[in-house]
Length: 162
Image (cartoon, rainbow, N blue to C red; front, top):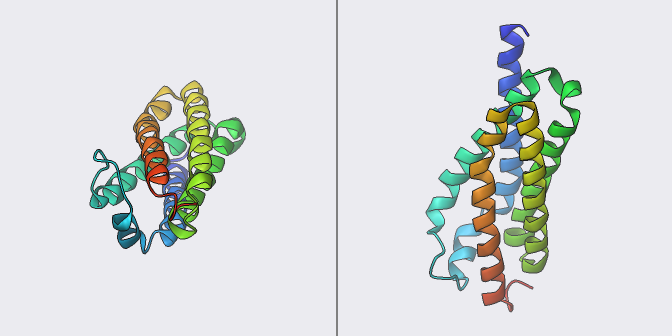
């Protein structure tokens, strides 16, 4: 694959990942005040940690998708890259469910689905390029933690998060 095509692919996969981040963050514009008014478990991280962590994770996701794409383009890794795109959409939806619409139960269902899709994407990426799968491990770990946090916050705030 020519070097300029690789660079365009790299930028494209990063842009795709950060578009999902932007869609989700549009629902999170007022997340800070909303999140701080919620009862949270003692083990909840400070609100300021989420932005930097997600920025790193989206960058890793974009790099992982690019590594898979580089093997032979979208056609060669259609299943893996389609899984990747679907999990990105489910990821972006979570912020709207939780922060935008205050739907704790649906947000939790969404994050469980997201976790399953991340595992499937990680396995599919690993089969194409092990490094790409490995780059999704921090994402899986963070979403595992976020799932527990989502559940706890939802249970602690039934009057706010229906």
